[in-house]
Image (cartoon, rainbow, N blue to C red; front, side, top):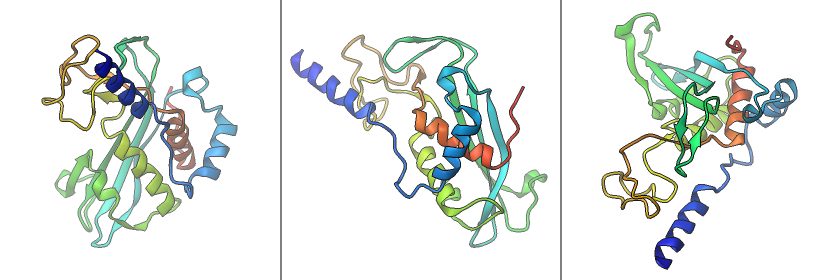
Length: 209
């Protein structure tokens, strides 16, 4: 039991390590402005849900167009979190996905779509940026997307090693939970919420009613 407890403590420490963007973050000035303008702490209910939909980030070296959609919302139902604690409706949730359009293709023609959904790899290929998008800003978004590619849902609980595949990891030492039998909520860190808010506001997203 002592060994299990020690392992659990190590995993919890790893899980609670604060998410941080590179020191040369391209949205830091924009983020400060977003916080000043909007209050920006979703946990306190200051902001309404907001989104940036199908924003053209830029073009790859061979001319493919890359779009992103970012949403910050509130869950409408009760969830169970990675610590096996109930989370009341209203908790912040995030969503990110992309669309890749072939060279000289049109967003409005389905046949021109090369990929869509969790295709962050193509975002990393952007070579020329659209108006108002910058490489550092794209890099910040990629850093968040890599860490939160399943948005705020997790197959493993806080007491299981996320590096071990869901069907191979041991049951939770506290309650026997088996990874993959449910989606568990992981609250997005405040820096993630603030950074995504800064990106959305910078690209003139409309606040949803």
